[in-house]
Figure 1: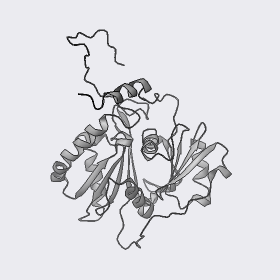
Figure 2: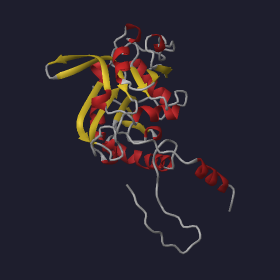
Figure 3: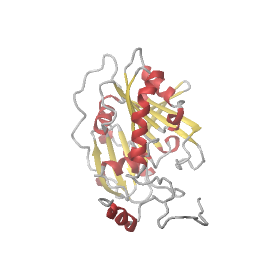
Figure 4: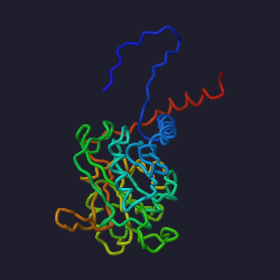
Length: 296
């Protein structure tokens, strides 16, 4: 909470230097993207296997990072992911998606297309609970503490090449779930269902239905998330779930101490009691700022 009691000024229109984060796009978009451009080259000194990486402003930067990695040995990208989770500001990253070196991590369709082609939750999903998290991340309900996950969407040696992600949409979930308001099959990898009210039970039922067995990610979002807006879709998903609590696989098998998840991988990204309201610009403020453009 920030309280302002007085503002001493010498000019008619004083300026308080501050940055506001919230529902995208916000002003931090341009600052965050500039910082990425500055430091990617420096990061490659530490991790020369990294070809490029991109944190998505749509997800508040720290919630979604895509990394293109050239593997010099088996599974090197996973070593890279763990290293990045201990490097400077990148240590606050919640979700890392690993892609092949020829995939553009700045292209959301390319990144999710790689998930559609290569991701197998049983072998390619890494969950890390109980670790430091960004102060701005409220999803775990515990300040500065939460969970992270890695999605390995790289091709495997000997894997049959798939030219493109599947384009055929899965069956309409409204046929079996009355609380589903709308749905979208995004980038061939992710079935997103917009639900009325609580989403966890919906996800638990859908991930176990055989008609969705080929879907890689099945996500429930709240009614305030517009499914056809790519930016707000990523915002509505990645800012509203805790990896350890809200990821719901279709099944879990234990191999010794290794818990292996069977897909689809469900995610309850609905708004939950205790989450803060989304920060949005007031229409009057937007109109005033728009009126400044073109003025000296």
